[in-house]
Amino acid sequence: GNSVTQMEGPVTLSEEAFLTINCTYTATGYPSLFWYVQYPGEGLQLLLKATKADDKGSNKGFEATYRKETTSFHLEKGSVQVSDSAVYFCALSPNTGGFKTIFGAGTRLFVKA
Amino acid sequence: DAGVTQSPTHLIKTRGQQVTLRCSPKSGHDTVSWYQQALGQGPQFIFQYYEEEERQRGNFPDRFSGHQFPNYSSELNVNALLLGDSALYLCASSLISGATDTQYFGPGTRLTVL
Image 1: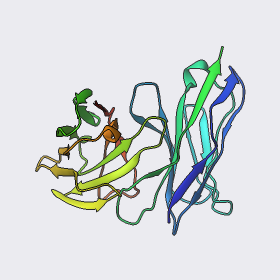
Image 2 (image 1 turned 60 degrees about the vertical axis):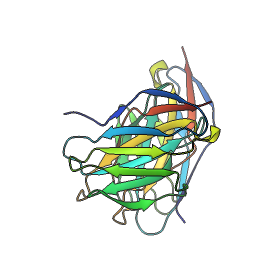
Image 3 (image 1 turned 45 degrees about the vertical axis):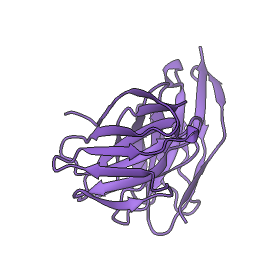
Image 4 (image 1 turned 90 degrees about the vertical axis):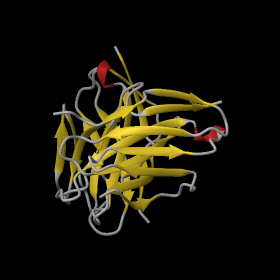
């Protein structure tokens, strides 16, 4: 079946530190991969996506590369800010004609000033 | 461009009651999916509606039902509420003919069952 596994949190970093949140997936075929962000008390916002192998999604300084050989989609940012504190969800959609998105458990990020 | 909207924002019910949550999709979208997000967990897929019919369903009991209207808006109904139904309910919209399965989420309705 399809599943997503992401690193457990919380992750605590100082401002301007480098961020990596690991994500691996299991899927048949060629899923689309996503990172969503959830700020306290809010719904999910699409952060970035990649739809095929070796694609790099990027947005707001965050980036992730679709690695089919390692079934990974790790999220990175070179210099985090306090405002990046949130919960980050890795997700996949099977691209089989439906829109059932499968989420990881989420990784909480705290950034200290 | 209006995004996905949901109402109400918060709701408090007691065990055994019934609840209806509402969702309006992003302009131009025709497919609505509902997710349940328990505290500290990732969203879990409940079901999806397209052309006013339920197209896919996750592992949720029949107490969870829905409806889609001709204007693509949708309702989620939960009967015989249990304490474990307390969660953030998220609505997501998409376009069935889109090139990829990208969904856009609303802010959610937080349901508390006492």
